[in-house]
Image 1 (cartoon, rainbow, N blue to C red):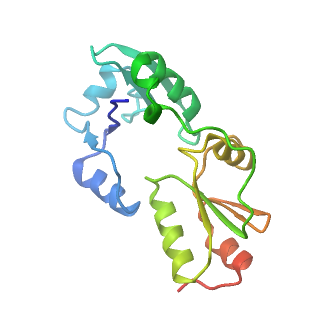
Image 2: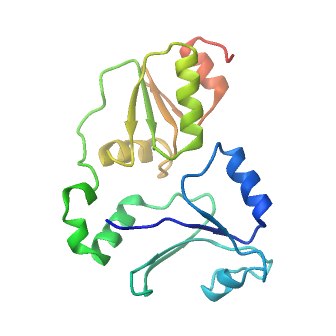
Image 3: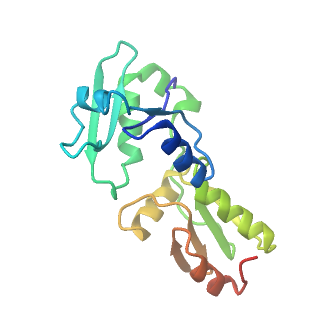
Length: 191
């Protein structure tokens, strides 16, 4: 499916760069809506009176028509299955192509001691991989963007959110990158 993800914030370019760097990099373009302050957010109806934008997702088709809007709390993870459904509705021909469809549900977890549930774009997942590799911890990685069954399991463990990284270490679930819990579960110290 031909799609483009863009991030938009009312923050300045240096602020956006610092934020992206703090996360280890962002794989999609970030746009600054700094001057005139919040003009794009205002045009889309998501600029708050306090001067910052709501957390929102817009799906815009190739003709520039807004086909989907989701305005949600900053702590709420958007439902990826819903986004896949909307994208398929916007471009049914592309959604029918094998590469464009979300991966199939899986019925069970891999039978290994350490499972890292992640996404390809997540900076914290990148740090988790580095941590496991530095400590020679054997693990199996499951991309919840491709494995929707795994995404459903993560949502069960993370109060309905698709939080990455999430770990299953011999049955102990650790949601998000919590160094103390990881060290205790794996019996290793951070280098």
